[in-house]
Each structure stands twice: as C-alpha cells, then as structure tokens.
Length: 305
Image 1 (cartoon, rainbow, N blue to C red):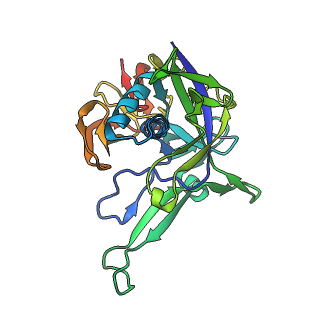
Image 2 (cartoon, rainbow, N blue to C red):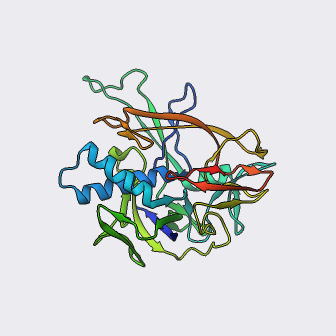
Image 3 (cartoon, helix red, strand yellow):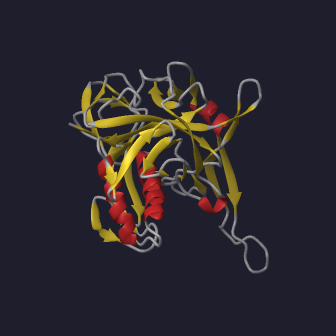
C-alpha cells in the first residue's frame, strides 16, 4: 500500500532542468517541468547529508536505493495558484494548461521562461572565442493578467510506501512535510542544474491543497497500477511501444550522475561521469489513441503493464 501526498513547491530562484541542446546551438534549453528523477536525486542528497556526517559515494548509493524502494515521484509542473500547466499536443500545436486554462507554447514561454547569456573571459579580460553561451531557465516570478508579480510554483505528487523506513528511521507524513525521523526531507530542495548561478532552490509551499483531484497525476491512488485513458495527455514519459498509437513526440532519454540506480556497480566519485543507458519514451503531452494500464517507476516514468 502507498500513501499519496499532493505537494506544491515555490521557486525561490530560477530553475534549469537541462536536456540535450539542439545540434549547433549555443543555447542550453530547459525542460518546462521537473522529472521525477530530479526529485529522487534531490531528496536522496538531502537525506544522505542529514544522516551521514561526511557522506561518501557509497552512502549516496545506499540511501538512494532506499528512497527508490520507498518513494515514487510524479513529474512536477508549473503552477500559478490557479492553473497547472500540463503540456498537450493538439492539432494547433503544443499547448499548456488544464481544464481551467490553456495557452499556446509561445504564450507559456513569454510568461514563464527566461535566459541568461554568459561567456568565458581570458587572461586579458576579453571574451574567449566561441565561448558565448545562453542558458534557458524557468523564472521564479511572473506577471499575472493585472501586471502584478507573482511567485512561480510547481505542483506534483509523492507516494510513500506504507511502513517505509530510511536507515531504520520511520518515514512520517503530516501537514508540515515528509519526515525521516525528525527531519523534514522536503522542506527545501535544490533541483536541476546551474546551481553555480544560484538556480534550483525550491521551498515547500503546501501539502494536499491542490484542487485538481480529477487530473493526472493527482487522481492516481496506486502508483503500481495507473490507468491512462484514450485522448488523455500523458503527464510523464511513457516507455515507447510500437503497439501504442499516439499523437505527440518520441524522445531518447538518458541521464548521468555519480552512479546508475539500476546498476550500482557503475559508480564514480565525480559528478556526471556515469552515463545511463538511453531508451525511447513518449514525451509528456503526448495523447494516446488507446486506454492503457501502467506502473510508475522510481524516476517518474511509466511502463505499460
């Protein structure tokens, strides 16, 4: 049995969730949502550094495996306090929103996305050749329809296994957070990349206050058995199968880190040195032409069952 917790984080700083840039581009693009893998990594890091005075690679691996076994994470999507901006492929192109509001991709980017241009400086104080680089990010503030500045938030779900423990410390859920012993594992997290610019700092905003119980992923009670209806956009990456008819996009997913969660033998003391096996997935927002039943994995992706 699993207990679902609906969670909203507030962005304290801009957020960059990187993926492969376009060929020949100087832009490091950001995803417009936070994959479950990023939540798993951030919570693993936070809990490990709480439990271990001087954590080593093996400590992160051990705690990460326990988090993987006892937690499931949805993808988290931008939330303005009224609308959660899920992607959806339509005949008019990619749109963002839910049944309360839906906007075009260009309007979404105008409202929420920014960029930062940087360049390397040589010893003479001038820009190095071919060092110009642009980093795309999700802004932590946006202007509403009245022109007022508001906080950008992200909303999603975490499922915790019944009687879960991390290093013999019971996992406790209440209206203040998710606790490992007396430690609130989700009070604040660092998500994504470009932390050297101060990016990725999010703060817990609310627990179980999202009024979207009729929408995925909030309507999913059991992560081991998820029903996805025909003509309903998926809100995570779904493992590709040639037997699934769809309208949307296919993406080759990989990853890199200190270790491979599926193969703990692969490990390094240096960040990003271990590259995970790439596989094909249907992208969030893709609309299926059939009903399917799936299982939510530790990283927020879904496999058909």
